Amino acid sequence: QGEKHSIFDERAAAAAEASGGVTALTRMLLGAGPPDAKRRATLALANVVRGQWRSVYNSGGFGALLVALNVGTDAVQQEVSRCIAELAADPTHRRALLSDVASVASIVGILTADNAATQQCAADAVLAFAEEAAAREVLYGIGLVAQLIRLLTAQAEGAAALRDEARVSLLGTLAHFASDPRYCDTLRIAMAPLAESLSSRHPVVARNAARAVACLAQSEANVEALNAVGVVLRLAELLPSPDATTQVHTIFCLQTLPLQTKQSSLKLLRL
Image 1 (cartoon, rainbow, N blue to C red):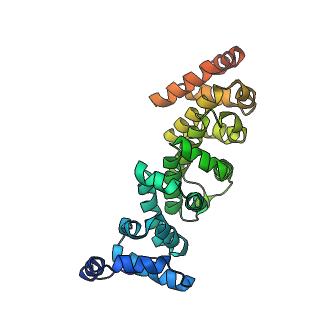
Image 2 (tube, rainbow, N blue to C red):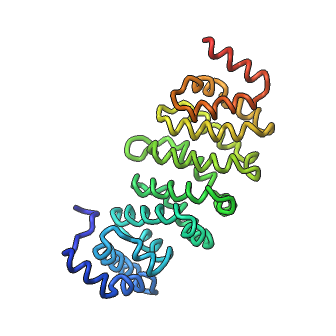
Image 3 (cartoon, rainbow, N blue to C red):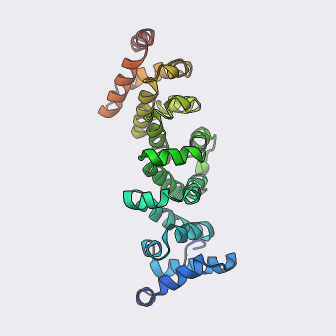
């Protein structure tokens, strides 16, 4: 069906892999051939590995996966991006990838993918990267924060709209930056989308937004800007949340704000 790659006979695929077919095709993928040759090699690999792109990574590293990601069909991109997200979740593989800024930038680039599954995998990979302080420096340097804000504030609808699951990962990434003293005071452009996300019906979206706001509220330099985007009212509405983690973040955030802010919160709760 259209984008889906054809499926070889299981025995033929297994034989190709056992005979070194993955290694040979990966070399073709990484070679200096024209784009059409790389697309054919990617399709052939997809037929052989049947979704298990880790074997391609073992043969050619992240470089091979990124080439396949760039030239493959939507179905292949979903498979490859899922593999990259899984590798990024492993600290050893993640650090190997982070040593190549160009590769990291390529993964950040697929955050804007039209395919929701591919975008989700990219968001998950970026979230995994952001867990490490050294990775945050790399990500900040290639403009990730600005890209996150564009995605979170995009006015797309229907199939083009950012899904809540991807929003969860993007907000989690922002929370990592907000918790880092190097970047906490540089995230004013994130405050409006964070405030809006506090009112989300998706519980984990609201939780991650509350976590990020709580981190930002610890800096006096951010308090005025947080108040300006209406954070107080939205936090007050979150206090009755059934999610315990959201409550902890919300209460902690309100406790760190100035006295007049807490008084405003109490007033709003009486409404």
